Length: 432
Image (cartoon, rainbow, N blue to C red):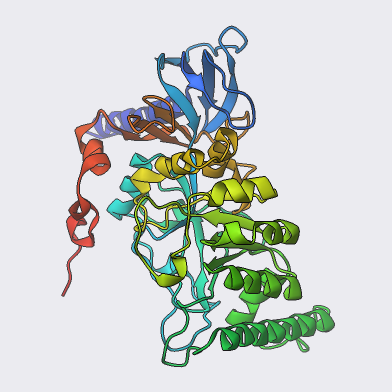
């Protein structure tokens, strides 16, 4: 009996080892048109991935095929990097509340459900990296989180760490305009909104100075303050501000505050960015925009036009698209850039706006956003041209693992099904 038990254990270990080896085995995708983003399209391309990373990419005949590699015929398909969504609300999280208008200490990662069906929706749309935001009903709704929407039991398994030493894996969500003009202690005017933000950053500057003056002496250090700690990270450039803003005057106010306190700024939505494109470019701010194919929403976004991408590109602004899911369904993300191209944005910059530009806005461009050796093996396989209305995302891969396959009926329902698939009740949550 003892020998039988030992044999069973040995077989289990062997099986586990075999599985790990299979994951480490090189996969070679051949015959597709490959759009690497940082280079010209490769018509008869070869992509080699192993150990979760890209090993090689290039023309057929120029790339060495590893021995014993799994070879996948992708002839007739289009391959490109996984899409980067700089602004989304998938994961069923939340943020700061009405108890005050400024919550820089709140972390949305503490509320995200890693098993949410919304992550499966995102990968069905080709999204492989996403900035999940708290809402924008407050001046500071809290800390965002950068994640990969891959199967996981905990949010920690999904995190994209941008600064391991300081444990930073997201930015800070701020907002101005009509959203933060609420009751329960929130400001009633745009001027007061800016004043409250300015006041808190001044407080953070003073807190930072106290830490510097202490020179590491515990007796002289100020008492720990989670709000101030977050804002010091912003002041030191370790954490990016993602600022919800629509009207041209609100955009300029967001820029004005960032200049005053010297923090890095990504303007989110920027509905009237086309009106102040030169000013955005001069400030060196980045712009993450949304494209809509039907009117609606709030009055301050009435001038949201799909010429935005073209005008920002021509001004020299680093521009990306985002979904703001559920405003734009993650499954329609490719269409956002197509609408930009329709209105005069260049094809190349539109492709960058779905990938590497968004990666730059999240400080993760060294890992994702283009198909280059050494980067994470995050990519998608398309049935046709990225901007064709007839094109489907056929497969999505994250770190060398296939996380979506349209030919799998269970996966396909997330690509084609109605919204009931993604509601919390659909994945066995019990509400009392």
